[in-house]
Length: 268
Length: 265
Image (tube, rainbow over all chains, first blue to last red; front, top):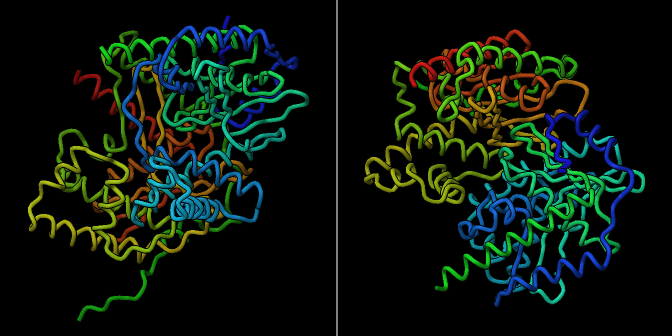
């Protein structure tokens, strides 16, 4: 049975979701990891696979090829700016975003950016387009900071998304997360999304939950993952139960199977 | 003799922020009642029947009555509106604007990629393009002179989108606020909404202002402090303090639009 909860997004509701999260965190064992790796290995492939919640939401179907734009760049720059603001609270959001963009440009200018990266895209832009990138990133950072400031439990901005390389299966899983709320011995993941949630948003959240548990050194799952859609004023949450972790892992393997079939069809 | 003042007599930002000491406590109780008002109204209009596709209400649905024609909604008017919106976004992040038209187009292309409106812009001949560039420059000057400077601690964000589903998904309210300042995390109301339009302000602009406040209230469950509209055509600024009466009036206007859309199906 799924633990998916749908609520309106208000500070009170969000704090309620945090305070009522399960107290006993579930842990993944080595057997779970080995079993998952065996399933991914069974989905043969020649290329390195990268899977995330978006792949699960698309049910593994190939989506339009990724291209950088102010909208696709906002999360990376916005979250990095948020880390700067957290490190140095006297820094304004605008300044933090500007500093982050400057760092990216410096990386590209010093030849440390690989082709296709955010830095190499930014360094090709002229200043009006860079201004729009700043505007989008400022919107993102402001929104996440507003969410964080409404929390009554201690929170932190993670240093990066959660990544897990599945052993000998040429598969990398990426779990996105904006904030980690530390509540006693448990942790709660907060994700922010644009637009409004769809029918596949629950499975997407479960995938993020599973990846976060796998990426944890001890396999400890977050007690709850909360997805926020501020544009729609809606939250969805999923508890870190074993049933939800299993469902998340199944969805990821299923997405890999569909991806593989699509590649074979293209090759044929 | 025409004399041009070095600065506009009004500063949009200062007017919107108003007197800090006079701000009311944040109203967190009105949203539920407004949602119920809309849900009841939608049920009266649609009953138990479902719409084949969701009825979509936007601020533009309230700006003009369905039987009138608004020249600002022609493709040229829409392009001008989009370009001024890009300039506003650049202005908000402190970018200096030297060539308003070229820079607005550059910013727009970075965001939109290929679209019908960009295609229309590319099809313009030199004369048409020059006329549009002159027009955009004139609107940009009005905006820049009147706007004032935005402090970053006011948390400005531009082109803020909102979506609300009502009537079991049969009705979708969509909105985009050109500029939002202030925060919902304090005890006092401080969020101000600004709609920048390239048309002169009229009754439709007032309805759109109310609509922005209504959707923001439904989205966050907190009533914003003020809603406003600025015309780059005339330099006029209208600002209204948001209260329950204003929001309830907007809910009735939205129900009228839904009724029209439902009847035309």
